[in-house]
Image (cartoon, rainbow, N blue to C red):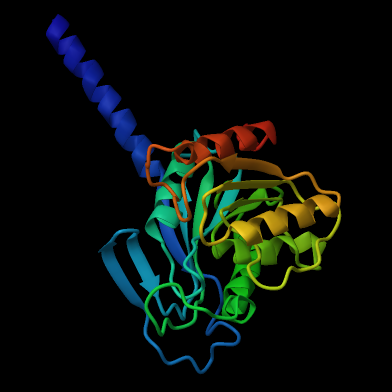
Length: 283
């Protein structure tokens, strides 16, 4: 009898676990109806490469999408985060700066939306020397549109339209900053995080009274350190008080990789910050 009872309890526990997993949803939608404005004559084909040192990397994005990672209803906090991966606006490190982050947020009850934004064709090996303002303008337009789309689906996705934020990695920080700094105050995200990311072109005008900002970077970043510090200083000069976590080591592009450095824990610090902002409590 005891064994049968234990087996019955185990079966119930498994069914509950399976039900929770079933309620955790993933879906992908286009963010524009029809062709994205400005890319009507783009003829290149999207290319996906798996098993790179960065995981899956996407090139030549023409059709921007959002992939939603929705937590189970019983666990949903009512907060949504749009994730903009990096890649110099010529590629997207969509695993370790996208899907991996989304799954962590989803497990914590936060709805996550991976933005596959438009990028220009990569024409050379390594990090190209390009005009970032020009290369990223399509991604920025997609990033602004993504906020609108998430808010339009807020009721369906069980989030508050007043709790929609951004997290941008590296060049994804260009996308996140474009949404955060846009002139239309009502269309801005409600919070934003920049992980070794910033505006990498001409420093835009920083409005006053921005939504809360979180930043994290490593002191030994060989790629973006100057731009990140410049952005932080510009935010401070405008009267904002960004939360800043400066790690001793970690380099550039650490994402969700474990390197044995304190930068491994940036996500924990971001989670604590979300909690302090009241964004993890159920809405």
